Image 1: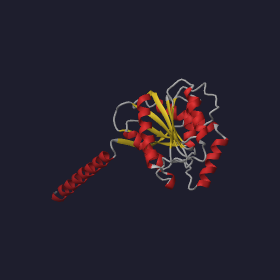
Image 2 (image 1 turned 135 degrees about the vertical axis):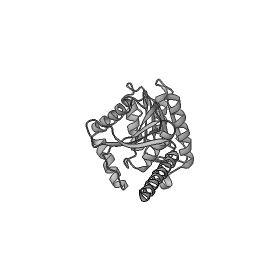
Image 3 (image 1 turned 60 degrees about the vertical axis):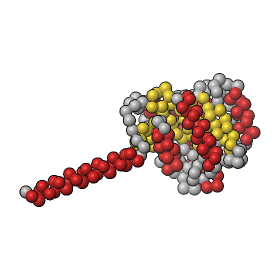
Image 4 (image 1 turned 90 degrees about the vertical axis):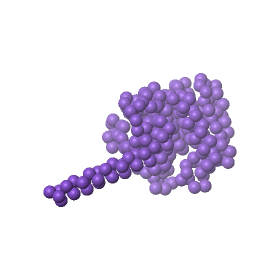
Length: 259
């Protein structure tokens, strides 16, 4: 009897300590919840990374689109940071589970998507529909897209083709200043490096001028001493801390204004 009582007390103590540990970890997470979600109705194996505030309130939502590397730890961390600011952030996967280990593989994966763009458009439409369908914690009329590099180009496509977003953030994503933008309803903010070798600064200025002729208070910024990929902390010499911080402040102010 005495032994059973001791075992019971030890069990209770273990559960209590475990509860405290879980609470400590919860507090350290800044009150956010993260999970893998299946957001594509047709392709059940496509999973995204979702981060959201750990409450029962409704929040604006973001579709985050990865660089040409794929859905990796960098974009997961971006999702967490947006969740800490009060957004339900879904990092999509346009590579169906593949993540590039080097530039050669990344180029191959990105080229594959560009050569067959239909599935990517459908993927992004499904992401928007999924977020708008989360009635418990998403305000369906307040959805935006954010993309970096390869994903920045797709964020632009979401605005250009009116895929259901109210605002669009583009980090050094490709565009065509002569595109037909008659369908576009989203407001755009774009961040580009002055020294980007892949996107000429003159083209960025042309794009900037074109957007000024359209409805909406669009914003395009060109960052001095910054090149392509300047906002990726894992980008080595490409990373530009000052430009990254300025772009982040402008992005968060922009999203707060339009969402």
